[in-house]
Length: 331
Image 1 (cartoon, one colour):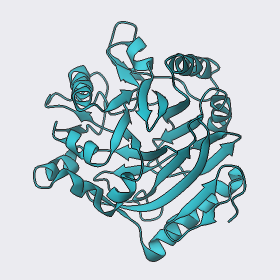
Image 2 (cartoon, rainbow, N blue to C red; image 1 turned 135 degrees about the horizontal axis):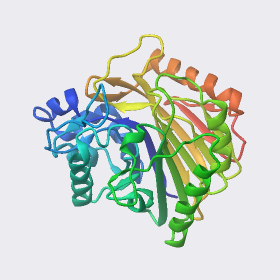
Image 3 (cartoon, rainbow, N blue to C red; image 1 turned 90 degrees about the vertical axis):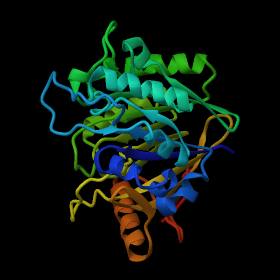
Image 4 (cartoon, rainbow, N blue to C red; image 1 turned 45 degrees about the vertical axis):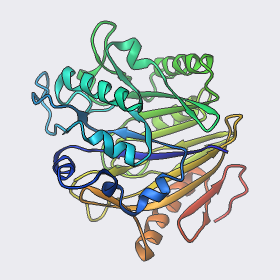
C-alpha cells in the first residue's frame, strides 16, 4: 500500500540558505528524516524561490523576500520530497526570473511541481507523480498575493479567490478531471490559503473543502504557519493546515509556530485513503526534529482539541496520533 507524506511550508531561504554553505543536506531534517523516508514520497509547500537572481519583486510592496541558492534542491531530495506546491506568496519574490529558475532546477532534479508556470495554463496543470504503483495528481492554487497571478500570456501562480466564489471549485475540478484523464487515481488539492497565525479554518474554507471533496481525495492546506484540525469524509481526508516545517522564523511562545507534524497517509491502489499517522515535530533554527516527551504530548493534545469539533477522534500512540479512515478510531 503506498504511503504519501505531507508536510507544510518549507522555507529554504535567508538563514536556512546561509546554513547550506556549512552543513550537509540531510542535516536539515534532523531526527525526522527516517519518518520522511518511511513515505514513498513527500509533498510539501516550497515557500521560497530557488535562484541566483538577486533582484527582489518590485511591482508591489512586500516585507519578506525568500531566496535559496540552487544547492537547496539537495535538501529537498534528502528529505524525500518528490513534489512541491508553488502556488504561494513567495514563488515570485525574486521576480519572474527567480520563479522560472525554480521551475528549471526542480525539473532538473526530477521533483514535480504544481501551482506556478510560464502562463496560466501551465500554472493550472496538475503534477503527476507515480508512487509505488499509484498515480497521484496534484492541483495547487492560492488566494495569497494576487499580483503574482499568472495570465494566459504571463508567468505566475494560480491565483483564485478561495472561499465562497463558485468559480473556484469549478476551475479546480476541471484541473482534477484532466489529471484523472492522465491516469491519476488519487487527486491532492494543495491550497495556500488564508491569513497567518489562525488556529482553525473559517466557515467559508470548510464549505469550500466540502465542495473540493467532490473531485479530490485529499485537501492539503498551508499558509497559517500553524497546524489546524483534520476532517474526514467517506473516502476523503481534509488537512486544513499542515503548518510550518523547515525555516528560520521567530517563534510565538503561545501559538507555537515551531510545532507541527509529518502527516503520513496510507492509500489503497484504488485511490482510497486508509490510515493517517501524525508524527509531532519541533522546528529549530534551520532544522526540524521529532518532538519528544511532554512536548510531543502537548503537540498531540492541541491537534486532538482542534480536530474534535470537526468530528475526528484519534488513537494515541507512543510516537503520536493515528486515525483509521473507516471511522473506527477512538481517542
